[in-house]
Length: 229
Image (cartoon, rainbow, N blue to C red; front, side):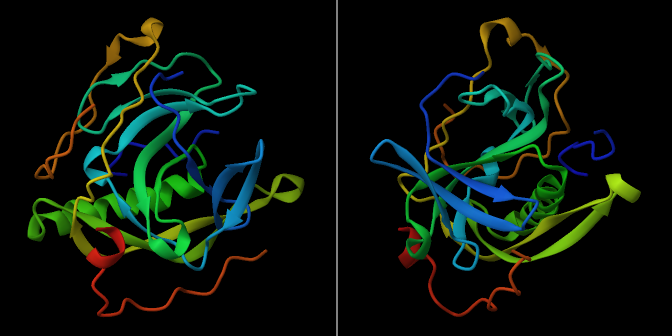
């Protein structure tokens, strides 16, 4: 639980960014595209590969039930986190990523409050904190290796979600277009709560502003910098 998430319990400003979405109910990863005034989900579960800006992961609380754009009260891990605005805000994370060429190739926002998803991201962040020691100034290339079922409740309240198993397959220099763009809290929530644990890794020079699929193929010797340069 390195990121400080609580798994036991049941609006920011800034430029709007296209998103990727992990559906914990099915264990699928999708890209949400907006074309011809319509939102379309494109399944990228099997091809998913992305550079994760885990140097600038944001944690805090998010409300996805606004009827419009989500409301974020998050801050960069290791820094000050905004106070929880209301009961509709749930613990969550936000990461800016760059998709590999086979699944879109553009910059996306990845955020969730689903506990099953948060577990996978927490484990990924732990691996990142260990791996960056040998890869200073670089960011991890991540794949969705597999998913595992997580069953909670009993009887009619029993449900199964799928936690992602993310794997770091290589490390690359920060892509030029992967610029950290934080979700600033609303003015009413500007007063920060106590900061979370800080063990920030070396900087990469960023600007601070159906059932689940089978396991993904093992990492190859392909130079990932060609996909993200």
